[in-house]
Amino acid sequence: MHDTAILLLEIGAVLLGLGVLGALALRAGISPIPLYLIAGLAFGTGGVLPLATSTDFISAGAELGVVLLLLTLGLEYNADELVTSLRGNARAGLVDLVLNAAPGAICALLLGWGPVAAVAMAGVTYATSSGITAKVLSDLGWIGNRETPTVLSLLVFEDLTMALYLPVLTALLAGLSLLSGALTVAIALATVSVVLLVALRFGRFIEAFVSSPNSEVLLLKVVGLALLVAGLAQQLQVSAAVGAFLVGIALSGQLAHDARALLEPLRDLFAAVFFVFFGFQTDPGKILPVAGLAALLAVVSMATKLLTGMYAARRAGIARAGQARAGIALIPRGEFNIVIAGLAVAAGVHPDLGPLAAAYVLILAAFGPLAAKLVQPLITSLTRRAAGETA
Image (cartoon, rainbow, N blue to C red; front, side, top):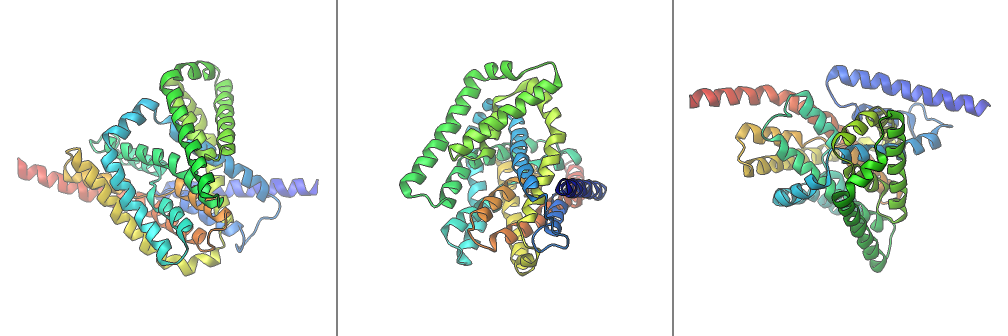
């Protein structure tokens, strides 16, 4: 009974604290992710108030948070949009991959961490935070801008790349042989292909099964299906996150809209727990020694994402102001980056990888939305001046 009381006290304190931090972030106009990570650092190993009883519960909540994050991200798209986006923006997507995966991989190799850490760090620096970017686009009124479809198409390309990258990384982290690793990747490719094929050809049957006029039943069906597929994907060494993402893709139209509305509060709750848990696993005393390197890597990543967005927007015939906005919108890092770093940390790749990734995400998750807010007036001014000169 005593342990149960302590468990409830710890969980209640963590959730209430996260609520206060979220309110502060909302007032400051920044993403709450950096504050959640800081909370995790405070409550984890080496923190000011380490938790003792609720760690296992929060660990399970973190796993659920990853599944819900990727499920709701998948609900943003349908299979047709993914295929169309992949065909139309393949060149810009490849430029994005090369420019932004390279800094992390090069950093790990220069530090002597080895090829597996290089693959993990490539993923950490590559993926933009879809959640934070979507919030930036919405908050600043950029949703209707001409460059926004280009930004979203790059995010879709990154999500598809992650669906193939995560199984490769999982195989490397598990230390599988070349044959076993190739088999794992083949299974992952087959799984992704089958799910996309099912979503394209038989999506209406899945939607008919999941659909319900009752919000409670709909929520239970969607979450249950996502967890089942995520568990199956994990068994096939594809990654639970990718499995959940593909379930989201299989649902579309009004059903996806209704499911997303129901899932958002649940997702936000467990996503916050996920970011806290990552902080738990990182000793804050190890962050300070890598803070300078994280800042340097963040600056390089900001430059490469700016170049990526500007290149993609220019190919779409968008003016310079829109090109700048596209680049700025791609700066934030968050969910996928922490997921990748968490996998590497759990596998014991290198003791400094977790602290470096945490510091890196802290910087870009906070600075990305802030940069967009600060640069918006300048872009608006330049656009008006250019319009006046044209007139």
